[in-house]
View 1 (cartoon, one colour):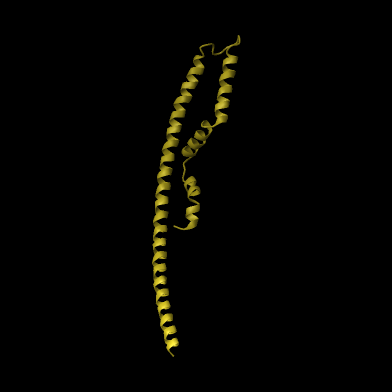
View 2: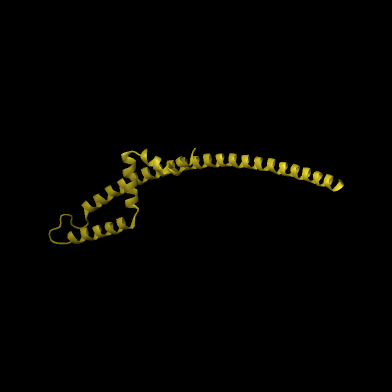
Length: 140
């Protein structure tokens, strides 16, 4: 695996998503945000205010609103489960990618350590040769 593949894993994964998976991610990101919570609360207040007027289409106890909220909760649950399932598959793919990267790095490190050991032995041999040559020069 090259560095290019490593740095572009997320982009490659995004390209394989289906339209439904992308939609689930967008909806999950939207529903799990403060702007959604704020707009939802504003919608509820407006609904209650408008239905408190004389021309109420859904008078208290807001049965239509209750139906809409139940439908929203059911859809949100399904969408969040779809998104969670996708996140699990992404986490598994990333874990596999990390394992493969670590295995390759371990092999590289072992090769470097072996080369370092060989070089250390060669340096010791060269030092011994130099000592012998110095000893011969000192004798002559």
